Image 1 (cartoon, rainbow, N blue to C red):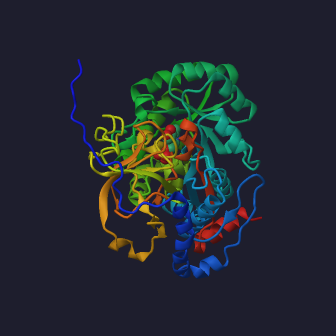
Image 2 (cartoon, protein in one colour; image 1 turned 45 degrees about the horizontal axis):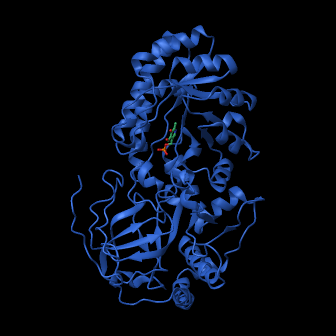
Image 3 (cartoon, rainbow, N blue to C red; image 1 turned 90 degrees about the vertical axis):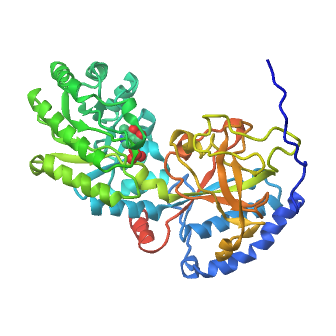
Length: 491
Ligand SMILES: Cc1ncc(COP(=O)(O)O)c(C=O)c1O
C-alpha cells in the first residue's frame, strides 16, 4: 500500500551568482594571484624546492610544506582545465613523508624497546614503505600480495616480515615458505595443520584475544584465541612438532583506552606461562597495533609500565618485543584536496523529496536537513572516504578556495552555513559529511581539503562508477623532518 507524500518544492535554480563553467576555471587561474601572498610566508622553504626522481616508476618527490603543494595542485588543475583535459579537476593527495619520519622518531623515543613492524594494510604506499624500510622497521603483512610488495623493494630480509594473519590460505603459507618468511600468527587448530603440511619450520606466534571494547575497530570479533583455549592449542602445536616462539595480541584498531594495553600485557604473560607448561620457551611478544596519534605518549607510558611489570625479567633474558602499528605512522601524513564538481539547492532542484541518507547507511552523518545546500565532490565513500564506512571516521572539510579564491588568513571572516557534502557516484550512501559547516560563498569549482587521510583510505578505495583513484603528490616536507627523509632515502 502506498501513501501520498507531500513533496518539498524548491526553485530549480536558487543560487545568486551563476557562472559558466569556463569562467570558473578562468577565475581559478586569475585568483591564484592570492597565492603569491600566501607563498611569501613560506618563501624560504619554497626557494629550495628541488624535485628528486629517486625511484624508477614512482612519482618525483618534492620538498616544502603541504599547503604549498596543494596550491600548486589546484593551479595545475586550473591549467589542465583550460586545455580541456579529462578529469582536469581530479582530487589528489599530498603525502608529507617528513610526518612519517617524525612519527618514527616519536616511536623510538617513547617505546625504545619495542621494534615496530609497520602494518602494510593500513597504507601500502610505495614511498611510505621505502622510507620505513630505510629507517629499519619490520613489516606486518596480511597476504601474499603484501609480502611480495615488501620483498620487491629488494632491501628487506624476510626475517623483517611477520605474516600476521591468523587465518591464511594454504597457498599463501606455501609461498611464505618459498619466500623464506617464517614468522606467522595463528589462533586455531586448523591453521596448525595447514602450517605443518606446507611450512613445518615456521616460527609461530599465538594470537590471543584481549579486551578491544574501547577501540574504533574491534578485531576480537574475528581473531584471537581466548586464554582458556591456549593450553589446548599449544599442546596441539607441540604434538605436530611445530615451533611456537611467542604470543601476539591486538587491542583493536584506534584504541582509545591505554589501559587496554596494560590488560593485554597481563594476559600475554599468562599465555607465556602456559607456553612453559606446554614445553615451550617463548622468545617473542608482539603487542600488535591500535596506537593512536592523540595521546600516544600516555599509551606508550602505560604499555612500558606493564611490560616492565610482567616481562621485565624475560626481556632482560632476551625476550624480543615487537609491535604492528599502522595508523600511527601514516594518518597525519596524507592530506586530500577534492574539487566541488556540483551543487544543488537543498530539497532537490526539481521538486523532489528532501534528501535523506538511507537509515543506518551513512553511519557518521548526523541529521541531513532538507533545505540545506548539497555539495558534490570528486572523492566519496567508494573511494578514499571508504574510511567513513569501514573505519568509522568522521571527516572535516576545510575550504581551500572560496568563490575560486585561494583561502588565506581571512578565512575566519567568511560566514558559514550548514550544508552536506556528497561523493561523486550515483549511490545515495555516498555521503561524505551530512552536517558540514562551510562558507556560504562556496561554489562549483572550489576545493575542499581533508586532513589526516593517510590510514585505511587509499588502500581500500574502489573505482565504482568508473571514478579513478586519486593520485598522490609527495613532499619530503620542511626542517628536520625533511633532512631525516633525505638522509634515509637519498643515496
Ligand atoms: C593484525 C593487525 N596488525 C596491525 C594492524 C594495524 O592496526 P593499527 O592501524 O590500528 O595500528 C591491524 C589492523 O587491522 C591488524 O589487523
